Picture 1 (cartoon, one colour):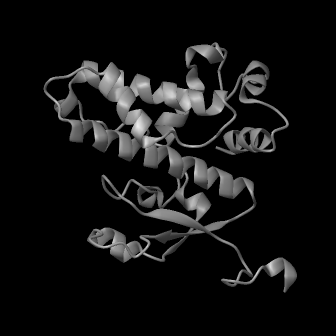
Picture 2 (cartoon, rainbow, N blue to C red; picture 1 turned 135 degrees about the horizontal axis):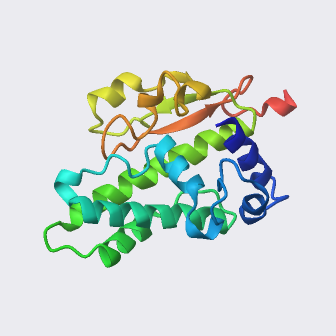
Picture 3 (cartoon, rainbow, N blue to C red; picture 1 turned 90 degrees about the horizontal axis):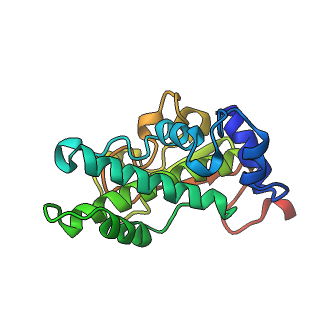
Length: 204
């Protein structure tokens, strides 16, 4: 993860592109495989952050599960190819799934559930990496006081976590959004020391 964060930081500064790093690096990104062929960086990133790894083979079947995972990998690839380390649109991902994973046995809601969950997972991963790159050490779990939130999200609301504990292998990894449950609408807010709402600490 340290290597990934270092590479991610170099791209966020817009000094280098992911393609340049992939051609130069033989570690986290490619392990000697062609970057354009969805090399092992995608496999490791998706495995570390559990992107597409919890799709039920019993519900979707092995072939369709693999098709969904390939579409997710291509969407992750596009976010880095475009130099935009941000999550893909849930609506576009849903449309891609409906178009490419042809199934008469699965409802529109089933595709929407996968799209929302996996988009939230990618967004959560990129957000935590961005906060860490900016030197932020802690984040606050917030359900934004939305109605009808789960008991788990109510219990976690306003709880502060160290980012390192939420990253893959961290002791609170299971609390990383959206791992708590499917269709979670919560998100993390960065905790900036010295910040008072409505006042910029730079001018205090």
